Length: 167
Length: 443
Image 1 (cartoon, chains in turn brown, green):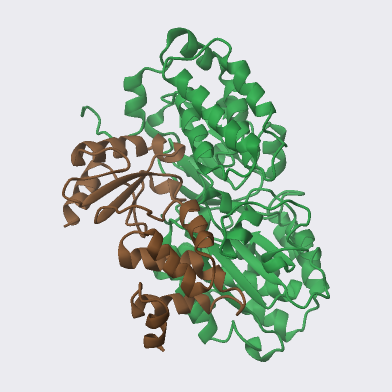
Image 2 (image 1 turned 45 degrees about the vertical axis):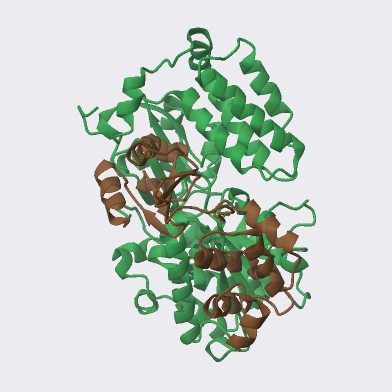
C-alpha cells in the first residue's frame, strides 16, 4: 500500500502519504479535495515550505488540478510559498494583543534578531512574521512557533527564554 | 487560562480542573452524554427536541445571535444527505472562548453536535477549527477518538437506530472562513470565499446538501439546555436573551480571560470580575462584541448590560462576546489603524467594494496616524464606508466599516487633533507604558 502510494507521489514520503490518507478518510469518497488543506500542511511539515512542484504533487495525489491546490496554498496565511528559517516566529499585533504589548513584543524580537517582518536571519535560523488574530487574546502577547506551537504572555523574559530554546 | 470567577456556571463547570478535566471519563462524571442517552432511549421526536431548544431562546453565540432552534427547523426533513457543521474558526479579534471550550471541555461540543445531528437528521458532522490553535485541534481529535471508542459516535449510537460520525477540519489562517459559507467552501478544499445567499446553508450547504452551522458555544450549550429544560435555561438570562454566555475580556484589565455570566449582567460587574482596570487607570472605550462591533465610549458602556438587546440599543453589537477594554493610554487613531489593517489584510478580494474599500480605509487612517492627514479625510472615510456597507456578498465590508464610523463618531476630536497637530493627543510615552510590556521604569 505504502509503496504503491509512493509510486503515485514520489515527491512525498510514505509517512506523509499515510497521514494524507487518514485525512482523505474523513470526507465522503467523492470529496477527496476536502483533504487538500491538511495535505498541504503535511507536505509543508515535511519539506519546510511549499514549492510549486510540491503543490502540484499534492494536487496529483488528490486528483485535482494543480491550480486548484495552488489557489488554496496562496489563499491561507500559514502556508509558506517561499523557504523560511528553521523557526518561523509569528507575532500577533492585532488590537487586543497590542493593548497588552503585542507590537512591543514584535519590536523586541526584531531588535534581538536584527530582522524585520518577512525576513530571515543570515544563519537561516529565524523567520519573523506578523500575524493576525490567533484567538488567544487573553494570553497576550501571543506568538506562534512554526505554526503549531502557541506561546502565551510573551513578555521580554519569556521571549529571551524562547529564543534561547530554539537551537 | 482557567476561569477565575463565575455566576451560575454551566458551560464552564468542566473547566475547574484546567487541563486535567477534559477527557471522556471526567465529562461522564459531570453527567456528560446523559442527555444524548436520554434523547435516544426515550426516542424523543425531532420536533420535540427542536421545540425544547426554541423554548430556551438560545441565540447563536458566534456573533449573529440568530435563534438556534429556528435555524434547526429550517432543515428540510426529507433530504437523504445532510450535515452538521461547527464553526470553531475563532478569528474575530478579541474572541478566545471557543478555544477554551474545546481545551477544557471538548465533549460538551461533541455531545451538542450529535444531538443536533439527531434533531436535523444528519449523519455526519465537521468541526472547523481555527488554524492557529493546532494544540486544540489535536485535543479535539483525541476527544473524538474517545467518543467513538465509547460508542457515542459511529453506527447505531448506544444501540439506537441513529448513526452519526464527526470529524475535525483544521483551518490554516483565514479570518474569512469564520463566515459560514466561506467555511463550507474551505471544507470543500477551496479558497474560503463566501457564497451568495440565498440559498442558505439549510438548503444548499456543504457539498450542496442541507447543512446546519452553529458556533462552538452554541453546540456546547445544548446538553445543558436539555438537562435543565429550555424554560429554566431562558430564565437564567433575560427575556429574548436566554441563558448564560461566555465573555472574552481582553485589553486593559487586570485579569484578561473568559467569564461566563447570565445574559443581562451589568458590564460593570463583568469588568469587576476581570479584576478591574489595569493599574487603576480610567476606562476610555470598549468594543463590546469583537473588533467588528462599533466601539462605545466609557460612559455609554458603563450603563449597558451584557445581552443582545442592551448592547444593540447602545448602538453596537454583542457579537461573539469579545469585550476589548481600552484605557486612557490608548490613541484611538492608532487603535483604529490596527483594526483597519486587519480587515484590509483579511478581505478575500471577491467583492470590489470590500477589496478596494478596506485598502482605502487603512491607507487614510494610516496617513492620519502618521501626521499626513488632510482636513477632508474624515468625510472621505465616511464616504468610503457608505460605498462598502450592504454592497457585498458577506458582512466583512460592514465589519471593516463599523469600527471606522464608530471611532470617528465617538472620538472625532482625537482624529481632528491628529490631523491639525500631526501627532497623537495621547503622549507617546503614556501609550508605551499602557501595554505593560516594559517593566515600570525600564526603557
